[in-house]
Image 1 (cartoon, rainbow, N blue to C red):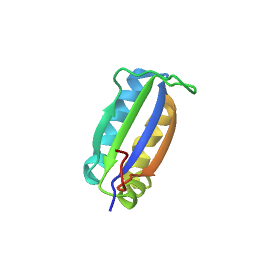
Image 2 (image 1 turned 135 degrees about the vertical axis):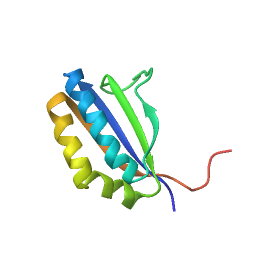
Image 3 (image 1 turned 45 degrees about the vertical axis):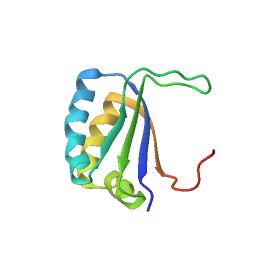
Image 4 (image 1 turned 90 degrees about the horizontal axis):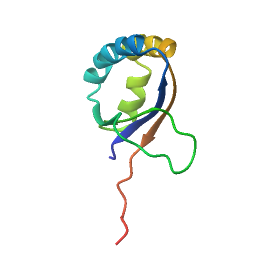
Amino acid sequence: MPKAYWIARVDVHDLEAYKAYVAANAIAFAKYGAEFLVRGGRSEAPEGTPRSRNVVIAFKDYQTAVDCYHSPEYAAAKALRETASEADLLIIEGYDGPQPG
C-alpha cells in the first residue's frame, strides 16, 4: 500500500499566530504518525504561482492522511492557521509503480 502525502503551500500573514498553529498541529501529527519531508526551506517556482512556505508531510497510507485532516485534533490546529495564513492543501496517494530507466 503506497504512502500518502499532504502537500501544502502557505503564505503566513501573522507569524506569532502561525507559531501557535505549529505547536497545535503537533498533537494531530504525532497521533497519525506524520513525518515531515519538507518544512519550509529554499524553493523555486519555475511555473505557477508560488507561496512563501511549502510543506510535504508523509503518512503511512491515504486513509490515515485523510483521517488526520478530519480529526478533532487537526480541526483545532486548523482554526489557528486560518487566522494566521492563507493556504492550499492537497492530500494525495503516493505511487508504487514502475519507474523510468
